[in-house]
Length: 370
Image (cartoon, rainbow, N blue to C red; front, side):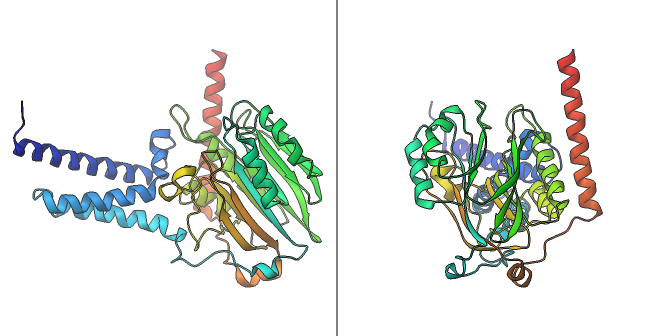
């Protein structure tokens, strides 16, 4: 039976209205503090939601007289809010971290960082090995590394006298390697078992700094964000307690414009080199133009950046982050933005994150005991 044109038109209008309702609900849910996975996933595709909001508002304005003007105007208002969240990661914003010329980045205080989530099931080892040879980083962090990845990267790791590694079969293994002088290195499960973080004191030139590497678990079906958020907050509190410069790297499984990431910056006194330069989307690797940034590099005010880029797609679902940094407190003091500091509200937010984590952990233990 062939439906009349009016029926098709009516169905199309209701589909548009349904899409508008879904986008509005997702945008409003993302503005809440709830940790449920099905809410927090709306934090990630803000750019995609923004495009969809604008397109849906335009379509409704043109074809749905009953929706005009309030529904399209409401969608435009939500679009403006999404722009507000994304704006810092555009070239229109002022950079937080000063950029120096590449010719200035050859002093002993400068070094290259390569951070890459390899995708555990990815077996294109040769492509990752080639990337390491080409970049020749002073600091190397590989994530999702199991025993097979450890064995495959062994020839590359011989280049680095100082290493931390914990291969795991659960996609949360990590390898850290550096040719810089290192002390006080450790591998710790700070929030969730078999989800390691790494810490080390490194020396750039004649100055020490602390390295923090994180790879918390993402919000997925059945996995809310209490543990992820707690790991991020605990790492930020730790950075704030240190009397030395700090860099934080890794796959945070969070996006730059989320409240949790902003809380991490404010608690830890971090600056984001991406601000004022772009999103540096790393996931999904084959569609970063439509993706979002999951892989991070944060620095305290003593660092400046000579170069930062997202590397090529080489078999993983992530792309690597490559940066040339310099530990130069004088230049950083003169050219960097003042780090945002955590006030009473932010400290209260952090306390609530940790309280929810403790309550969730206690509940899990009780269920296991039963």
